[in-house]
Amino acid sequence: MAELENQVETIQLADGSIARIEVINAITPNVVTADFNTNQLTDYQTNLNSGKANKKYLHTFQWSPKHHHEEVVEAELSLLLQKNLGKAEVMNDTIRIVQQGGFTVGLYDQEVYINSNDAKMESKLSADGKVSTKIWNLDESVLQNLNKEGCNRLSIVVQDDTMVKSAELKLVIKHNHH
Image (spheres, rainbow, N blue to C red):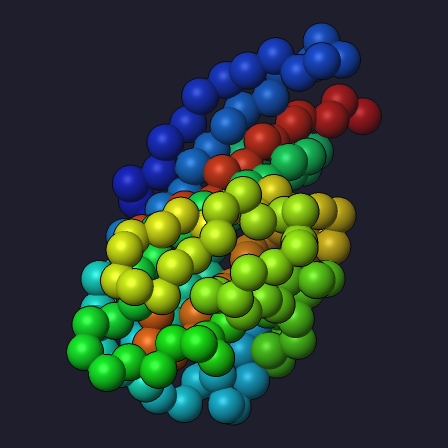
């Protein structure tokens, strides 16, 4: 697993069970190419704070269950984004969660800079170079992939004139006793 700077804490859930919160960041580049299609794998980069124009940002978050019967019961993806400086054309930029050859997971394919009625967006991004936060509370379509044996990952694509300053995936992981 590439993200060595992970943070972990323990919480009690509403049903009284104990879960751990694990926060995985994207400081160390990691791309599982099987999650992306040929177009997404063309002209991409993996570094945070890269201001290169026309370079998609790709990253794969991965986690490893510490026990056999663990599952992710909640997940939140948080990105700090900024328009690349210069003559970047950002109005067509998108952010999406992908899996298995670049297919979009659920409804997680949105324009970065256009106002949206999507309730999953806690903040709207501006195209004026200010740093903005995008937060997605992830639904069952993503949790299934995070819990799939042998997969346990989430991949993102940010197109292509938007700088990703930071990215982290917060997981609430429950141990199910069987």
